[in-house]
Length: 176
Image 1: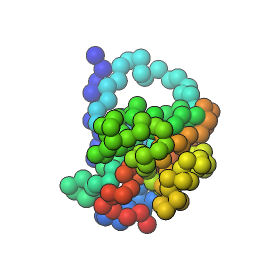
Image 2: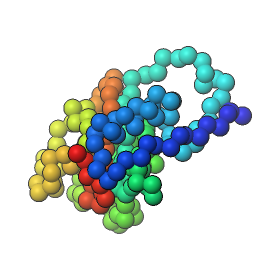
Image 3: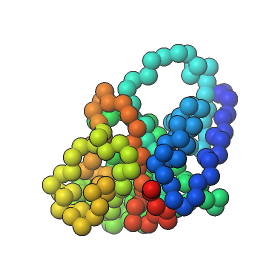
Image 4: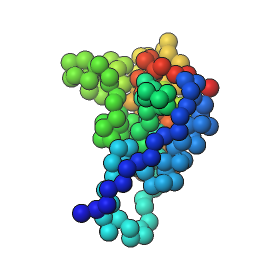
């Protein structure tokens, strides 16, 4: 049975979140080894063996609502590149659809409904260009908004960091 590790609380932010403040928060979590899960982690003796990890991209998924103490609700994940952002979010148990989660309310990744909308706060260079379908669905939305089902993140050998604002239409804070 592995030792149980609780994650330390995130630093407190006001309702205006700066990218540099978030990056500091993210770096704190990553430097403490909390980049795979946000709630609880277990480790075993085999986890302590020094092995070279394959290339991966670190993600910070920011919830649209702040925690009661005013800090952002941030989920930190890591994934291999070359996959659609939608799949990375669903595999990581990240809320993607909000109230549109039921199969009847979203297109299941076809790019036609627009319910998998996210805002790319940082790491745009690691994402594929907008598809024709995205251009059509998002023609009146900010350029930083993407459809997760149409967005491919990096290549299998890519490394880097991406910060994604979940459900940008409902966020209660602003990025500075």
